[in-house]
Length: 252
Image 1: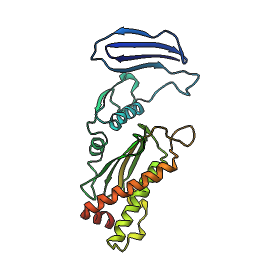
Image 2 (image 1 turned 90 degrees about the vertical axis):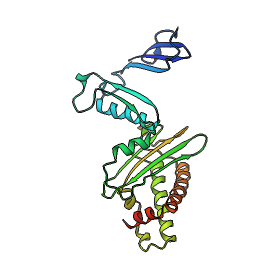
Image 3 (image 1 turned 30 degrees about the vertical axis):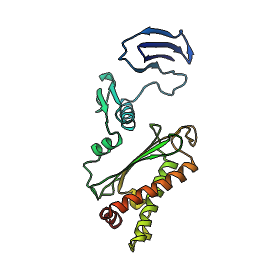
Image 4 (image 1 turned 135 degrees about the vertical axis):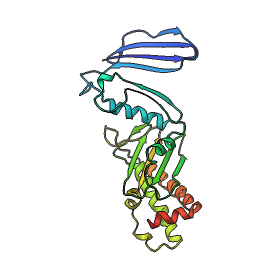
């Protein structure tokens, strides 16, 4: 319904007001302290567009936290009026993960009893400055979690990037098992691995393709093939470099 945007850049502050998508004022330019940087957006949701104009503090908290996780070393402050909270969500917090996904996974899953002490982590360069980061922790109990994101937006229905990682993992383990003559290797399927894993996948794409309008699932066959091949190679290298770990994973 209403929106005000303020941008701090090179000792100047630019601001403009909008009503239902149309400029209400001209761009206002003023001087400001040169230490000020960034963008501030204030808005009132439009009842004619949104089914509900009320936001869940818990969802907002998680949403903002994951922004700080997926863009490492970013500092984000969270603040909301206490009276709007009806659960255990903090009304005020600060997020900063200097190592991004690594810090988040180690902080949140450290209590899990692990198959192996060493986790798998890799940053992959794709095409045209596109990239993918993967972190996998293997636990002894059948407690799994798989979180995937594209351009910091959650993809709860998975898609090409998740399929690529699952297939790449399975293929690399099977290749390693056959080469080293593990008798039961042919019986292993992707669920045998995923069900004992905590995984986070984050990709940054220039022009991602989604299935439907909700953008919950990525559909990019070429990306899947490329990422699957890279993942297979990277995880196979990791297995060959950590042979004791590889044996534990296959024999679990």
